Length: 235
Ligand code: URA
Image (cartoon, rainbow, N blue to C red; front, side):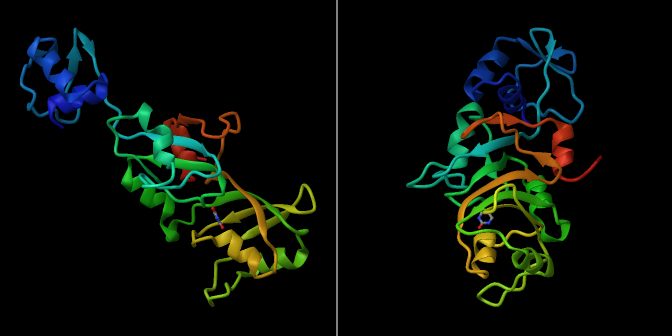
C-alpha cells in the first residue's frame, strides 16, 4: 500500500490531508522521516506519526440490524441501502453486504469490504447456517417441519437442501435454519404449504447471534473472535 493511502486509513483522514502531514515531516517509515506519498509500505513495516506507531485494519466487519424498507445493496437509485446506513462511519471503505435479506425482512446483515470472507460465508459448499425467526399467517405444523427436514421442492421444481424448522414460541411462530441461500427462500418454502410469511428476521449467522441491543438500523464492528464464530471456526 502507498504511504499516503496507509496514513489515510490509519489516522483516518483524506488522501489530501495525508499528503500535507507527510510534507510536514511528521511521518516516519521504518524509523526515518519519509515525505514521499508514493513510498511503499510493506507488511510489517513500522509507520509512525509524531512518534506514535500507527496500525491499519485491513478489513472491517460490521453487524447491522437491518430495518424493514432498506435494501441489501451497496447503492440503489430509489431505496436506502444497508451500505447507506453505515457508510458515513466508514467513508474510505468499499463496503457491500455479504448476503441479502428481502426489503421487508429485518435483522442481521454483515456489511464488509472483505470479498474473500464474504465468499466463504456464502459459498454453498461451506454450509454456514443462517437462523431466522418467522411469523406466519397460520399455525406452524408438524407436516411443515417434516417437509423442511426432508428437503422442500419449490413450485418451480427446484429441490432444496434439508432445513430445520422449530415451531414456537407462539403457534404461528418458528425458527428456521438454512444452509443455502435461494431467492425468497423461506417465503417460497412456506408457500409450498400454503402458508404466508408475515414477518421474517435473521437472528444469527453461523455461531454468531445478532446483538438485539443494536435496535433497527443500529450497527457495530465485530472483533476477530466474532468473525471466527460467524464462520463456525474456533468453537
Ligand atoms: N428467505 C426469504 O424469503 N427472505 C429473506 O429475506 C431471507 C430468507
